[in-house]
Image 1: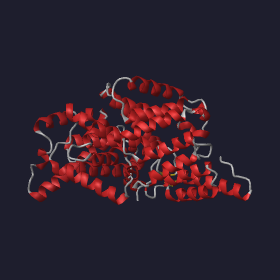
Image 2: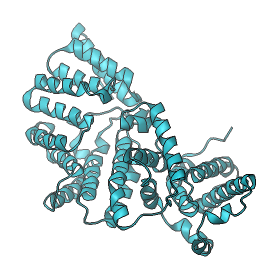
Image 3: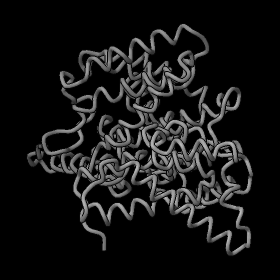
Image 4: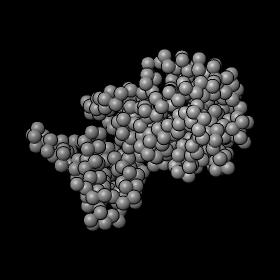
Length: 427
C-alpha cells in the first residue's frame, strides 16, 4: 500500500500531470503508452518521495522516470516482435539530437496547451477528442466526463478506450498543429476548457462545492490560448465567461461549506477586478464580428454580475439572450436555464411549461438538475408537497455531497412549514 501523501505533494503531482504527459507524448507519439508510463512514474513518486524527499526538480524527475518506462515498453515490444529498430523509429532522426540536447530545457517548458491541441486529434470525432483530452489533461474521472456529456459512465469508458485505439491506428502524428489544422481543432479545445472550468466551479461529485485545481487550470490555459489567437472573439468570450463566473466563487459557500444560491449571495464578496476584466472583454468582442455561444453566455453572466442586488437583475434581457443562445446550440442545459429565466419573467407556471419541454429530451432522463429546478419552481408556485418530492428526488440523484445536503435542507424547510414547526437555519 502506498503511503499517504501530504497536501503539498498531492498538489505538486496533480499540477505536474498534464505537463509531464505533454513532454512525453511530444517525444514518443504513442498516446496510450505515454499515458501508462506517466501513471507509472506518478505511482513511483507516491511511493518514493515520502521516504526520500521531493527531488529538487520534481518535474524533471517525473519526465525521466516516465521516459524510461516508455523506453522499456518499446524495447519489450521490439523484442517480442523482433523489431529492435522500433525505439529509434518512434522519434524522427532529425529530432533525436534535439531531444537529447534539450532534456533539461524541455522540463522547463509548459506543454499543457500543446497537449490540448494534440489530444484534439483529427482522427477522432470532436466528442471523442474532447473526452480523451478531459481524461488526459483535466484529470477528470470517467464518471465526471460522462456527466458532462449526459451519457452513462460505461458508454464514456468505451468512447475513451476507442479514442486511444483510433489515434494509435491512424498513423497521424501526435504533434502540435499549425495553420488551418490548428484552427480546425480550436472548437474542441475551447469545449475542453469550458468543461474543465464547469466541473471545477461546480463539482459534480465529492464533498467540495468547488475544485479550484480544475477551474484555476482552465482559466490559466484559456489565458494562454488567447495569447495564441488574440483576435479570436469566441476565445475572448470563453475567457470572459470564466472570469465573470469565477468572480462569484468566494460567495458560493457559507461558513460550514454549504452551498449559497446566487440570489442569496453576499455580493460584496464578488471579485470586482475579475468582473471588470470580464465585462470589458465581452463588451469589446461583441462588436467585432459574428457572436458565438461563449460570448452570449458571458453576456448573461455579465448581466448577473452587474446587478447590485438579486432583485435588480435584468431577467428580461437574460431571457432574450437565452433565446438567441437556444438557436445556436442544442444543449439541454441551456434549455433548462431558459426555463428558469422564463419563470423569473413570466411566472413559475410558464417556467414549468418550459421545463416539461426540457424533460422530453432523452438526454435529461433521470438528471437530478431537472428535479432540482422543478422543485424550485413548484415552491414558487405554492405547491410545497410537489416541491418537497422533487427536492428529495434530486438529492438522491446527485453525487455531490454539498448539493445533496442543500437539496435535503430545502425539502426539510418546506416540510417544517407544512407541519408548522420552525424551519432549520443553515451555517
